[in-house]
Figure (cartoon, helix red, strand yellow):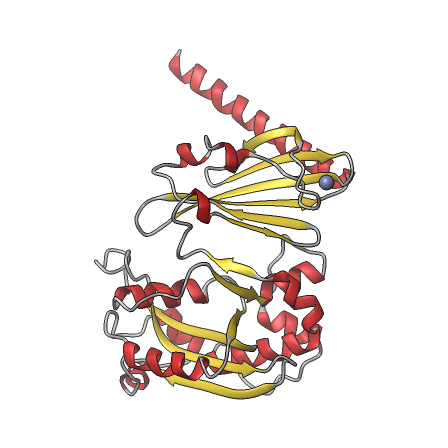
Amino acid sequence: MNYIVLDLEWNQAANKKNRYAKILPFEIIEIGAVKLNDGFQIIDTFQEVIRPVVYPKIHHISREVTGFTSADLQQGGHFPEVLKRFLTWCSSSEYRFCTWGPLDLTELQRNMNYYKIPLFPSPLFFYDIQEVFSIINGESANRRSLEYAVEFYEIEKKKDFHRALSDAYYTALIMAAMGAEKILPNDTVDTYQQPAGPDDEIYMRYDTHSRYISRTFPSRHEVMENSEVLSTRCCICDRRLRKKLRWFSDNSKNYYCLAFCKNHGYQSGKIHIKKNDKERYYAIKELTMTDSEGAAALYEKRVDYTKKHRTKRRQKASAAK
Ligand SMILES: [Zn+2]
């Protein structure tokens, strides 16, 4: 098994009213990748610049981040051809993708979709090394920058950040520093393609948490009415758990709950509702082991939410008078 550590740079519309801004918010302008063998040793690299056609002028943010000028990008290849070379390069052996953060494979597939290029077989499992870094350092709610992790492992900073190949290279060195036994149990799944039906829904179980990806529904409301979405099963023993706190929301996208397993203790639940490109909604649910402190924090969150709600209701009531 090889590991393809992938990093993309992208350009974006100069303004949100651009008619492509919805279907292709980020146009890929560079693919950088490092190929690792199963001992996490670097065996090859890939780097190509892509000439943007949807947004030919480089956005000032992308220019600042990457250092590319519009003239540099004119030298690049056409996306479908670069992608073909990249995928041929990847497939010299069986492989899994690794990225720093959850975005690259989603944006890669959105660009493929724009050009009507067949997507990867679904579900697309991969390693989000940024997430793995959080998990193994016990700070699951935190996402650290690549530079932070480079400093954490005392990796020498020989290259600039925010160019595709150098970021892939740093991610590869971080993986070598973490070691396979910490990384391999913590794979995740890209959700650009969602499960087609109830039988395709995705269940993943880890040491101290579990993750579930639902199929899509026409509305947020219908997601939150589905019994499978709302169910809480122990992330260790899979037993159906009673909730100490029912699902509640502090905004429109996230819901929280607290459940208790008599063998494995408190577990905090979180549902994140996402909308796909076809305006359909799906849930990503996570259950994570927690302690009485974590449970207390959830009770507090719930109290805050109730207070806010009450103030809002009062304001509404007094406005109606
Ligand atoms: Zn249990």
